[in-house]
Length: 299
Image (cartoon, rainbow, N blue to C red; front, side):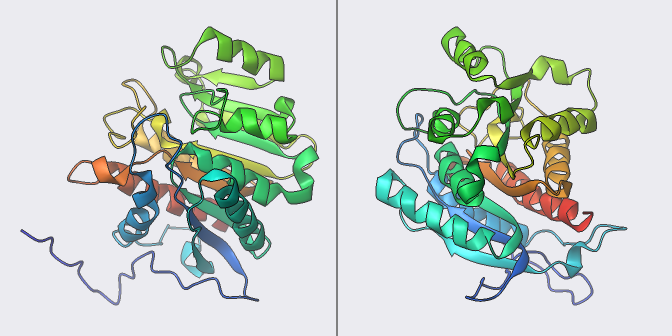
């Protein structure tokens, strides 16, 4: 049975279907798809996710009481063609850099976590020496080589100061002593999943923003959806039982959007091709876009 088309109500406008980011135009929030997938450590169809998230946005409105989210100028910069490999990554860096100069906030839709490298480098540009990174992730992403398990290490090697990296949600039984030691060697601030049970989200994010933005440079936020509990993120190959609740990651996304230092956000590790019939993971990713927009409206 085919899915029924979405209802049409002129008094209930839907989110999504935003106009293209045309040359010379600017926007408050711009989307850019970076469908990385070829170097994933787990088989993935994450390259299908940007299109799926755009479609899922249509299920929601852009109305938030007390915030003028619907007054923001939204734009869609399309997708980067074949963003994997050295040439593809260079195209992605250039596309991010171009879009980021014309938007107050850039949201990069992945793709696996490999997209974090071009998303951050493109947004930082010449500000890399003073830039900071916040990851919401169950994993350190400090592996050797080039994969979705190596973006944080690669950014450090590109010149990002490890002392301005904060990793929130690092999970037990999902990492190794070698990579935990590497994080400590780099000076990374690690806030483990177990610590979050006793700390308010707003306080955790305030600490992270203070550290990542301490040099006065831009901050990139990596929302790796596998930080969530597997029950709410079944389309993330590496999500585990006991991760964040959907509402928690949504709150982090809104706080990221609200922070003036945050120039860019990526949403990673959702494989739309293996989601549940109700598309719960893709819908969560779409809501992360809208939460970031709500944060931006509150700036």
